[in-house]
Length: 218
Image (tube, rainbow, N blue to C red; front, side, top):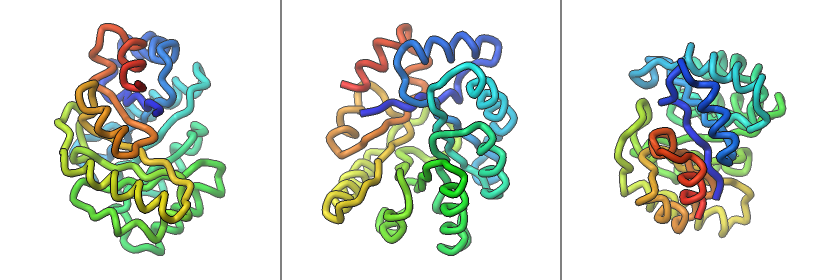
């Protein structure tokens, strides 16, 4: 299982050192939580733009961009500049499937992988028909918008159902989980079928990044 470290809680005054420490500790991705203050309450646009710019200049660790925004296309274009491994957009941001497919097409045409994220209350079946066009499904295991929340246990069943559908239909789609993930519950997500987990507070607030990431991967 791979680890995408959310840098939402990293303080700006020592961010460069933290990024370096995370890289040497073995994180697989840097998770960029972009919030516009509209789709979700918090606004992290300026900070995440700054962090993405820093990271693009100092590391080869891929960026895992998660857009929690209303004006999706303008943010896709903004964060494309940082050559992310993938850009994840919210299913709930689209007015209809046609708009969603236009975003997916644009991201792929610009040499990035595509992820679709769904909130805890969105039924997993709603995105089954677009799985063949994307690379990753990001299951929100908390309500999007802020770090440090407790994982919603019902979302684990959603991961199991999605995994079963992917295997049954021979699809090549990664499952990523995001929200409230720590050393106590990560094994449940792995057993459910996760390929990538997003962890922020659990890693950033630990005394030893390398040891924490290693334990999360076990």
